[in-house]
Amino acid sequence: GAVVSQHPSWVICKSGTSVKIECRSLDFQATTMFWYRQFPKQSLMLMATSNEGSKATYEQGVEKDKFLINHASLTLSTLTVTSAHPEDSSFYICRADRDHTEAFFGQGTRLTVV
Amino acid sequence: GESVGLHLPTLSVQEGDNSIINCAYSNSASDYFIWYKQESGKGPQFIIDIRSNMDKRQGQRVTVLLNKTVKHLSLQIAATQPGDSAVYFCAERGNTDKLIFGTGTRLQVFP
View 1 (spheres, rainbow over the protein chains, first blue to last red):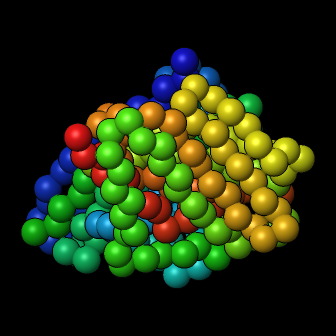
View 2: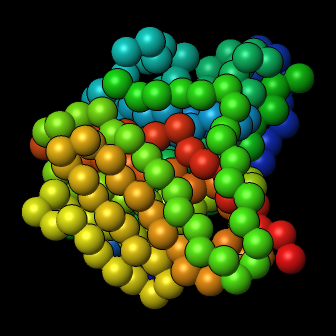
């Protein structure tokens, strides 16, 4: 079946540094990918919609200059958390839809900023 | 918009019993609904979906019921097993590709 691969699965970084998270659709092309953030004991919150070949669409309250999204190809979207701070520590999850119908999620990335 | 809760409601059931997890959705224009299972430290895993032109759909050991009148969705798990322990989220989708997630319910299965 379709698989969405997210890397890394966890990362620890120092405050002020940047972290890049990759999301790949392994056996299908996805013109649109989505990035979610999940804090402990909370639901998934949509951060942005990543569009191949164009700018990402950010949800209200999400800083586009802090969370840089690049959808360079039909199988890869990246989320870069710039100048990370401890409050950015969270579980980040990507999603890719096959044929604009079936939604597949990555394994998630646990980001810890120290 | 999205609902966020600080404390996940918990459903505790005995192994072998049936579980019913409920969800209230917000957008009457949503026409596609999905239940996801999320285990600790992992991404959501698809369980079952239903479109708004249906009110019931069955899978293997799972059934989803949709009541559009009161905007309510439920997930029934038959003969609950320890491996079913996880957090369950409902999600709704309208005329865009956005999936909006509910607050989630933690299912605990005890022997």
